[in-house]
Length: 429
Ligand SMILES: NC(=O)c1ccc[n+]([C@@H]2O[C@H](COP(=O)([O-])OP(=O)(O)OC[C@H]3O[C@@H](n4cnc5c(N)ncnc54)[C@H](O)[C@@H]3O)[C@@H](O)[C@H]2O)c1
Ligand SMILES: [Zn+2]
Image (cartoon, helix red, strand yellow):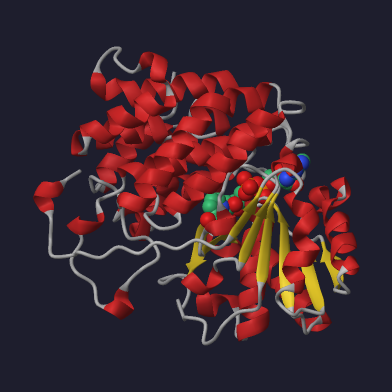
């Protein structure tokens, strides 16, 4: 990596919750929660996951261990300040709770993190939201146990210490970031993903690929100025431990991503690989961080006007997180190539071993991504989700506000660089 620009930073941090992984793991949730001495827990989910019946299975397992529970199924797909306030209001009114279970995709897990924070630590959502939008206060004490049960293979939110949400009045996405948000335990059962529609499999899978790639190409931790103990942040740049998880995530996605999209209803092995890939990538980004594609995704998703992809709730326009992240990734990795060519080439070879030595080196990773996105039905660029060249001046400030992410990029982009990345991403092929 960019060893030449080393500073005197010598320390990186890495954290993840205990995990229980494998087919049938969900059936052990009653025993696991009984170990935390809880009597009454709130299960948070969205309406569709609730309709599939997974939260009810959790209630039944908890009852076997004498644990009472209630299901709140009002999670908004891609949470907002409003939807989190409603969920936290419900938790406060119906509480107290001894613990929380999040069951669903990143939307449910992130909502449960924020609800646990507000219901347990007190205060308002804005107290905790990252500055400058919120007050970025740290929780004062320990939160209640939160068990995360992902039902998508994507975000890795079950192992990260962040929660992402839309602030509706400002049309921006931002988040809360603090190590105390990390779930207490993750129960990861690949069988829960068998019912995922191909479109959600494709979008959440692109989130995995981008997590692994952005984590792997993030600025090396030793290139930052030395921090004091109390200044250490959740995202500390790429490091030997996050690299290991990112590389494994890419190998698994290379083997199974296309199969999971095209044969997801019956290919248990492909679903298991993708669930493991999501977990591994989460253990990478949860510590090193993500950069330009994720920073660009915030305005792409936040300013959506009229895009309604199949597989997602039809009542509101949405550019799903994984889709929004992937749309500028090919161009972002063209921009970062020179900062760490060997990392980009290794990543391309991990994702597509068969094309490892072909063509212009700087084009290898973008073309591997484009082939993949075409095969799994991702729209062709930001133009295909409704943006034109006239929108670029409005998109750029949304990216530039994400300085926390841009500071992790291996090459720092200017406003003009971001405008060019958007322009060249109107069509990716
Ligand atoms: N905290 C983090 O570290 C982190 C990281 C990346 C993304 N995120 C956030 O996560 C959210 C996206 O989460 P996601 O991609 O996991 O999807 P999601 O939770 O938004 O769900 C997407 C859709 O899939 C449905 N669904 C979920 N599981 C299903 C199943 N098993 N069968 C059928 N349908 C199912 C949902 O009902 C919903 O309609 C975004 O808000 C994003 O910002 C958080
Ligand atoms: Zn993501």
